[in-house]
Image (cartoon, rainbow, N blue to C red; front, side, top):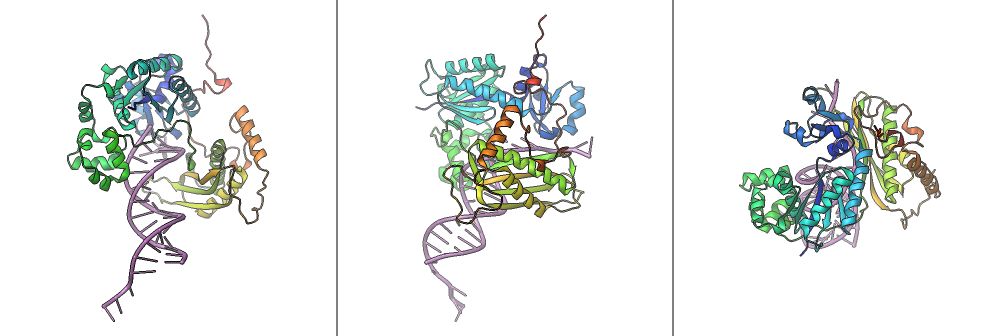
Amino acid sequence: MASYGLIDCNNFYASCERAFRPELNGRPVVVLSNNDGCVIARSSEAKELGIDMGTPYYKCRSRLKRLGVAVFSSNYALYGDMSARVMQILSRFCPAVEVYSIDEAFCDLSGVPGGAEAYARRVRATVLAWTGIPVTVGIGRTKTLAKLANRFAKKQPRSRGVFDLTASPDPDRVLRWTDIGDVWGIGPRHAKRLRALGVTDALTFRELKRDWVQKKMTVTGLHTLLELRGFPCLGFQAGPVDKKSIVSSRSFGHPVTRLDHMLEATAQYTTRAAEKLRRQKSVAANIMVYLQTNNFRLGQPQYSNTVSIPLPVATSHTPTLIRAAKTGMERIFRHGYEYKKCGVMLSGLEPEHGRWLSLLALPPNHRPDDAPLMRAVDHVNHRWGRDTLSFAASGITRDWRMKREMRSPRYTTVWEEILTVLAK
DNA sequence: TCTGGGGTCCTAGGACCC
DNA sequence: TCTGGGGTCCTAGGACCC
């Protein structure tokens, strides 16, 4: 019988910060979202202080200071690199690893030597020793049950970071203990509806009739039900999967009112999205552009809009994409508003090779030989750092850039910021 | 002053076709 | 008064995930 492990890094971003600042061990640490907007990661000490996930920073800033909490802006260069290190260790232990998110991975633990739990404890110890990141492992017959076991392990100190539901003497007790809203796949909407019907925990949900669940919660709800019963419905995907859409968007550091600034930001986000596109060796047939004012500020005039621009020929050529994106932005931009955010989304993605070519004439400025130019730009930026080569359309001063006032050094990816150790 | 960013899947309904 | 039936494709919106 199959056995899945879910390995989840504990308080991942906070743990990354602490890995390089050991004096912060035992102290409350929080990490803020982009633009220093709100709290998105907390060490266990910070959780105990009652600092909630998603709290806007400006609302808790003084309290955090008073409590002596170490506050960091998010540092994705660091987290992404630490994540890659953790995943690499996992793949030494398990041939089949599905990287589910920056801080989580599923492993197929069927038939590992010495039993799943003992094996998981070795994995856990190795990751901690080699990266400084503590992880928790949950083991179950399906991914949904592995998730559930993981959550149980986190909440039960006795498990010391590993819980194997398949070896539990009373697995139903664990399901009864799990709140319906904490089941993977059941979000706040469905949880509320289910609670109103007296379905308050995973065990009660598991006993519902499948036809009823499918009718009320579509096949995705049915999959959750069956997974809780031990029948795998969610595929296991080892290795990277190509994205079907690619988004790049940011909130601005200050409200933007000028079209030229908006166009710069649009060009910059398009550049980012196109880089991601080329990294997975795809081309896009469509680019969507959007902007929005600050919808938290109800007193101010609000405006948001989106526009979709089909590309005559699917492409990953940054200048072509920038041109389309700017055309779109010019179409939806209205003067007289304070904008908070804009973004682009690439969709209609296809593999770059074997792509369908338009029978119509190639559009102006689209030369079939743009691939070498983009390859060269990507190569330089990979070798010498992001934006070593950038497009003039993105502007130079970039007044709209996001705030990141408390970012830690990029210890592992930028030479100038590497950790220095002084010998006594 | 100040509230993140990036994804997936599913369904209903409209447009369009024969 | 009466107004087919079936199919495909696309999009918007909802729900969920981290």
